[in-house]
Image 1 (cartoon, one colour):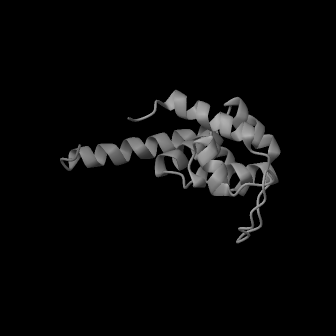
Image 2 (cartoon, rainbow, N blue to C red; image 1 turned 120 degrees about the vertical axis):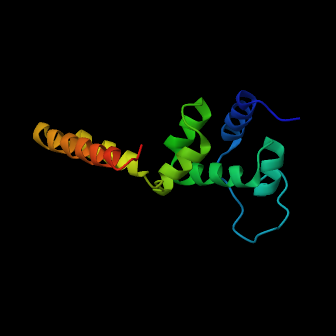
Length: 129
């Protein structure tokens, strides 16, 4: 049975609340009762994937202010993690044009509009859509 998006968000918020940032050093598998549990153990206890727990641990150690936003449900774990790591997705051509349009002067916008109109008109005459 698949969990609803709201239930998943609630589970992740609880996992974020349970994340302290204390992690075992990489490769350290020593038993440490009631001190620091492994990432896998914490992920299982929190009901999230190991990858999600790893992102929460990263946020706890490197961007606690973003972890707080995850706890409150203001931002997703993935978005907060990408923001903390400085990862940006590649813009689509339309998004690039929209950003440039917003920066263009009124004269530049008029020139662009004429260019688009003429290009579309020429294509239409050739039998295009």
